[in-house]
Length: 330
Image (cartoon, rainbow, N blue to C red; front, side, top):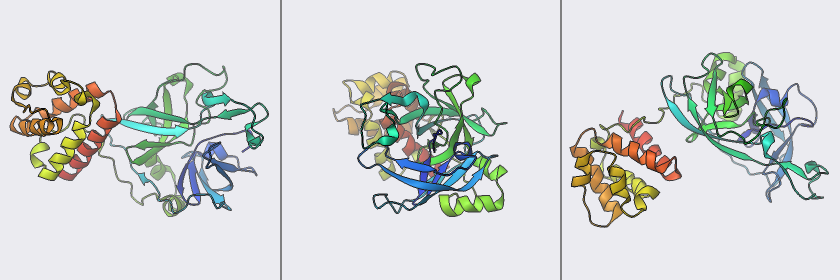
């Protein structure tokens, strides 16, 4: 849309979810771009199929899809966050103002403007402390801040509105606003659960039909604050090996004496009684079996691994497996 930019997420073949303030008040010429300035780029006209100022939510219908548009998309999962003292790891992708770049003019990209300026994508990993912003009905998303302000009257996060906030494989909110008083490292996202509070039945039905929103919103189990020590005895052999293989992929353990370094932060019994045969996979499996014999030792092991890994993709995989098993056996 001329003069206004925002982010969004394509929830099905013909529909995109975004913030209402990005597309309102409605004007002609609404365009949605995918894979901008990439080989697979495509652009399509859209209309506002639904918008709610109270929920700051809009659903755009894509019209006249081009042949190159991917099809047969499955809608995302939607979840509410647990109501408690929980901190969630989240991620989101959008196109904020501070990601404007300068490049050579490309005649085939007239929308980039005569100056060759374009706005690149920003993939943000952050954390949500669930008990913040409850009165507003939003999620406070703690993010790495941009290096500099872009001006006294503009937020560097301008354009990020409409980006879906993901917790693991589910959408839990949509970025809505940057409260300047919160600092450059905080964004606010409308909670998915908020939609159920402020939208009418007919509005929710539109989202159920076209965006895959469930009629009743399930609640995320949230991450295990520390892996429940009662979990290990419940695992069958296949599940124990699944957990073994995920832990054995951690970079901190694949270093020389890495397992010993991690276990120094835990129980001395684990250091003294774990097997040592030079095969990391079998040593990790033996460690888990040892944790079964000593109740209360598995949680500190996972906490130590988190500290060493510093939010690596491998430790996220371990936590996904732990979360799935915790939900299964709780």
